[in-house]
Image (cartoon, rainbow, N blue to C red):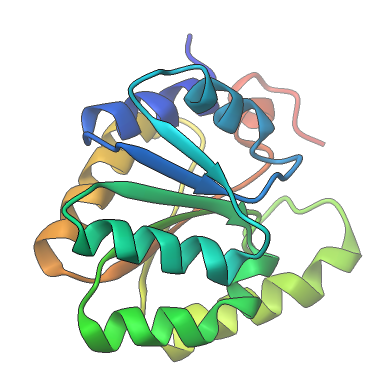
Length: 171
């Protein structure tokens, strides 16, 4: 059985993603390691989340396919560039760890989760939460297809407990 990171990675490959822009995060480390080992995908480590979204949107304008991977707190920092992308109809797919889904283990996550959710809801961005048992590969591929075809931005929330729940070991 594939881990959630392996399935998400397979979905990105199936979508033809050429660039991955990310800010290192403990929740997405396995995923970014898989992507970094693939010579078909160029990885760019950014200093700030808004910078990553700006890079991805510029790559789209240049005819390239990119994904941005970050912790959900980065969406709070990225509201202005996400608004610009929406206004310009420049699509960006963001994979964000956490996101206010059930099963969050720490109370201190509520602050960045609240900010991230407020940005996504306030900008009326499409978003989906990956769930245990779902086909993450297909969800990612379809999310990228939607972003590209609708020329919009979308956030896919990647909860940290996906593999724990699937293996019956969630707290």
